[in-house]
Image (cartoon, rainbow, N blue to C red; front, side):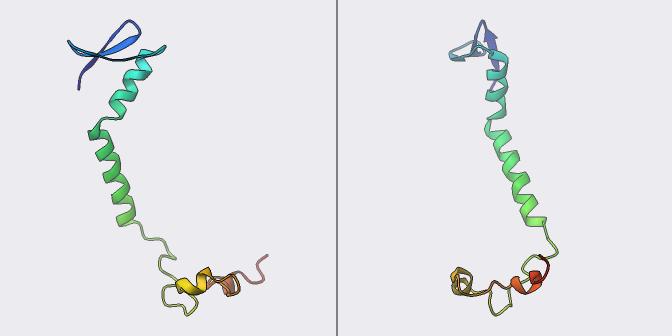
Length: 89
């Protein structure tokens, strides 16, 4: 949506006042940054990142016998990755 600055305020072009600020240029930038098109673009980028990302240790412990929710939440049980880090401290 097109906006214009009039004094310290931002208006819709040829219309209603949207808001005022000590720095109307920054206010205008924020309005354009928060358009649904920019939000949708950012969401698409985040989705793509997580859909295509494959870390070397992704799902590494999936089949490990200690990798159950019950075991992971039990403070008395070792974590599946504890074996890897023993002696590295």
